[in-house]
Length: 193
View 1 (cartoon, rainbow, N blue to C red):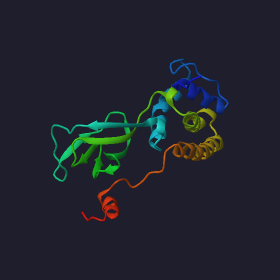
View 2: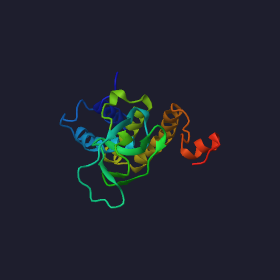
View 3: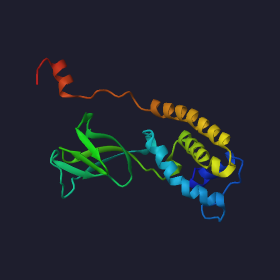
């Protein structure tokens, strides 16, 4: 069965020995707590690692107005951008600077690779789903159980699971190379710049 926001929170509650919920609006204190904590916990978890199921690419046009002096262009980040991974295309990184929700760059258009807020939990990897369950359990542990030791235990289990999940997710990517920069190309071609 595909994971949903509610199933992730229900499983987190079960890990704490509490009753599951059927929806975020079922009228219980557990549902209200899960609803309040889920989005921020999810976004924090997705931002913490470049999960393969959350990587997105887009070409951005510059903003119509800019007050930048040091950079030629200013770009607004996409609304679902949680973390900028790279700017540039074909392995060639462009110089850029992130300020607030703006990206400053001298290139137009801006080719952006970023971690998106993937709200479709059914498309998540099984290890990411489990990490979100553990993160929710850690976030809800003290309000549900009133026990600091249960909270600490859930945080410790989350930290151990995150090492595994990040490792497996990272192993699915090929090794990153330096790309075809002008410096490397000139070295192998025998020509200078």
